[in-house]
Length: 192
Image (tube, rainbow, N blue to C red; front, side):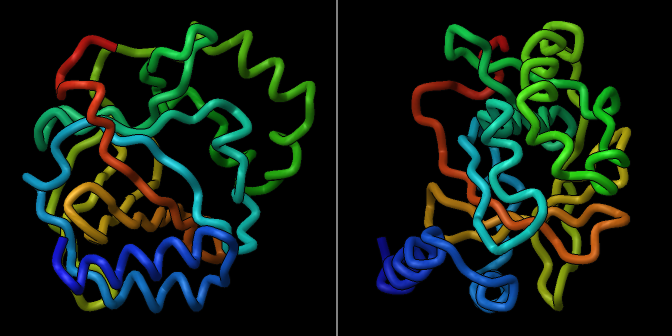
């Protein structure tokens, strides 16, 4: 790791204990935009707690991460099955508009049990997003554009195996920040 990557990783580790949107933006803006080739692979995801209504929501539902096989073959939402393996979900089947209006609803025990029961009906083997270069906050970098939701995730490089992501979702007053770490246990394109 370079000294800059070491410093960026240390700043991110500090923020992962809990931060503000302004501090998350400060790190995001200081990082280089990720390139598309750098994104290829399977990644484990975790929200960056900033006080956002979505903080901890994906994790409570069993979020695993994302997979980028190539620029046209992207699985934007991987979740864990009961056996721990990853499965791709079709974001177009998720009530994203409801989550924007009522994020606390998804945190209820009933909603979480219903999600686990419905998980097999929400899965897909088809890619549901693409990677493109997008300018965000004055910097060009890799971004994942969902096929069926008004969502664009923009990625910045922390180090060779860590990305800071910003989810831009129409209707949210502030972006949702998350961290991706390369999953060395899975090869790109490995069946889901």
